[in-house]
Amino acid sequence: MSAYFVTGTNTDAGKTLVTSALLYAARHRNYSTLGLKPVASGSEQTEKGLCNADALALRAQSTPPVAYSCVNPFAFAPTIAPHLAAAEAGCPLSAAAIIDMLRQTLAQTPRDFTLIEGAGGWRVPLNADEDFSDLAAGLKLPVILTVGLTLGCLNHARLTAEAIAADGLTLAGWVGSTIDPAFSADAPRFAANLALLERKLGAPCLGVIPHLECPSAEAASTYLTLQELQ
Image (cartoon, rainbow, N blue to C red; front, side):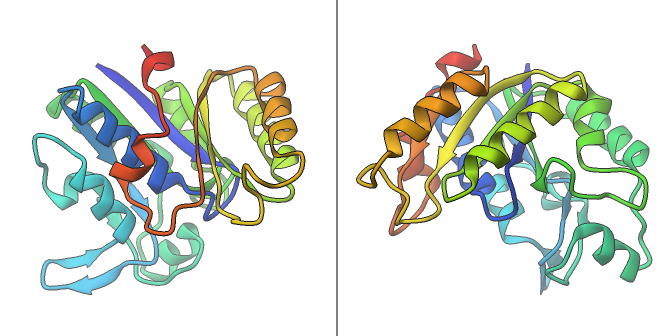
């Protein structure tokens, strides 16, 4: 089984679209898949409890199907930093507890291709002392970086890659996600920026998703490859 941790250069970099698209691509290669988002804030109350849109998107690309609680065991309503949402809900987060839960899930739900999506960027806090990066480190997972392609992304991407390496983890690959329509293939020096990322990140580019008017896992998957992850 191949499992990876998906992080981003920042909040709204396009992690969920990238994660969903990679899972979609794997499904259509007849792989069994599992998308996990262990902690999510910004959830809505439903008949079945709090549900997060990102977690639902990952669940939709998980084959065979799994329960929502498997994908997202910690859901919080406020659209704020997860550690703050958890504290306000009286449910403080612990890296050790989440890692144990993820290990159980991985053991009980083995799949050909599993992606665990973090929240925000690499150093988003879990609590006063731990970050989401501690989950990837605790599980010793290779990392896929979503680079939100916009002004400032070169610095954000390089710093994130350096932090991943400093934590002793492997950057397995990165995906460019065009979140700013002004920062696209038609923009001046777009290719030069991508070339710099390819040189400096030290990991294969799994694809570059353009700005999509109607983003979906299926549409985004056409711009991605899994070949470099084999």
